[in-house]
Length: 372
Ligand SMILES: Nc1ncnc2c1ncn2[C@@H]1O[C@H](COP(=O)(O)OP(=O)(O)O)[C@@H](O)[C@H]1O
Ligand code: SF4
Ligand SMILES: [Mg+2]
Image (cartoon, rainbow, N blue to C red; front, side, top):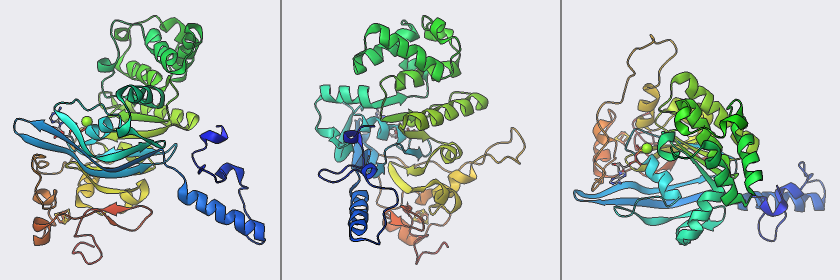
């Protein structure tokens, strides 16, 4: 990483990497350096800052508030999980970040998205296309919808590297071979000429990962990347994403309805419900002491190792609310067994809880609340 790429570098200030690891505060100079270091850390940029993002869909039945006032941050190289049941706004959040919302009927109606210091919502369409290609890689649930069935996989990987990294055809082909072998495709050079249908589901997902990494992105957006795969392959693909993210220092946003998968992979988790973040924090804090009854529900529906194989998972009773004209009550109220009058008359804000950056949206678990 060059100094100018150093995410910690603040305009005019020293980069974190320029400073000694252990700054002694015993001397005047040490004190000054320690102050600079602390100040620098305070101002260290994030890879991604999302502020008050709202995305709506204008349908015949009304306006769907798919993502409603969502704010979160992502550090360079960090893995963040976005977890929640189907329909709670996970994919629309990811698509909004990259401005891939189909418009009409969709529209980002408010908010700010700062990616690596760039104000994404102010970019022209062409600039946005470049940003997506160069800095953000996608992995979707179903590789067949993203892979072109009429082109060889070698061509599809090399084309991405050629377009976005400006490599020659030969260099791009070499990179494609290298990436294929990195993602665990045996005989990678020979398989360059194969078409997507000649690969199994798990292998196609590996190819998708190779394409996503072809342009050396800073962020990998993985939207339910293993849902269509069986459990063993699922574990292999997740491990692959983790090791590649470690090796390349790529940040990952992992979208999943499975809190167990997120807990195994991520540094932090955003739990989403009905278009909102309802709990956020470090994985350990959320796993050990979740402060929102919906998150308890998600944890409860995790399969336990001691349960009989094939037994049905417990699920949270009831359905998520309609996202057309959301009410002003707690959005989980109709399904929550701890509901009180207050929950029906106003919506809780995200408020701090024990643990770094741990926040939850629930009156009941606030300090004066009725659930402790
Ligand atoms: N093209 C669309 N038109 C209308 N509503 C949409 C569209 N895409 C998504 N939605 C709605 O937005 C909400 C969030 O969807 P989504 O982000 O896909 O959920 P998930 O958490 O399962 O990824 C859902 O209520 C969904 O019906
Ligand atoms: S605010 Fe009330 S209804 Fe909502 S999750 Fe908390 S206790 Fe349940
Ligand atoms: Mg989705």
